[in-house]
Image: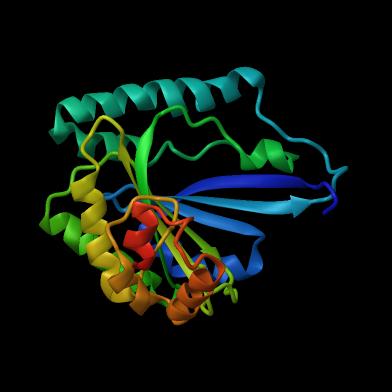
Length: 255
């Protein structure tokens, strides 16, 4: 498609307000997502609007941008996450510190320069696709579970939306979809937290992102994808001897 520019606006909002307006805002904006730091009541709201290719660029001064992106967004964030990994009780204070300052300055530039940002702090991730109307009950379930389990995590949950499609094993097959992505700092054990998120969202028909961490196999996946058996039949016809199968694919698709 023709080149274009994007204007990015980031704000800090109360979580209930941001989540309550999320679906409606997605209908009116080009790109919209929110980041919620667990155990806080705040969310960072990111909205990107498409502009003509010749629209004026608008970037913060170079020094301010380096301070936001590199010093705070990567260097300081790495130190805070590492400290919380060594002393887990610091996780909640770290989230409380980060949640009001996560939003960056307004930016307008070529789309590639706005979509992409340096992310040097490593993490493990799982992501779950839910019917869009399940967003608010899913968030309520996560908030209750995090409080009950005294979850201590520094990284935010990322929430985004996409349209329905007709691809048999697509996470958005035949339903408008909201994605909830959970992240865990790479120096911390990721499994218990990510598995907790998986189990909490299970009642909402959550489908796992195929390229990220999850613990589901063919039995569970067959209930989440109406055309699962049709896909298996096509796969068998294309590769009857299983030459393209791996142990991971056998777990996901069955033998």
